[in-house]
Image (cartoon, rainbow, N blue to C red; front, side, top):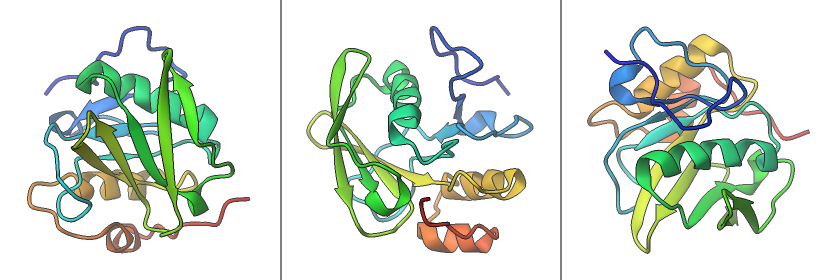
Length: 167
């Protein structure tokens, strides 16, 4: 086992980025992301990662995740998110000096698609900020498990997480 992935410039205020092999025995706290280093061509099937933002403020939460992902994956072009899960829905954010486009949908599916390049997609389960730590850890582990084809809603419900509407 190794410790959480090193992200240059990381402070205690940034989200830890754990590789799938690092999750056993490691704390998963609000703001954490678990990453599988494989890609998918669509939103079905295996999740590549899971993310547990601390709040519903996308402008404060997404930059930390994108910085951590860029350190592992390279430049991120766009992010697809569910508009109903966030307080604000900006069309883009400038992160690390680069503009990252945000595509919003109203599907309420607790997922996020991160795009690197033109067609290199990473699918993430998004854990609601209010989730209990044990349930969040279980959901994140289930999402990135080899062979998982369980939809986000079933994963969350299966561990007792019920998404709350934004305030």
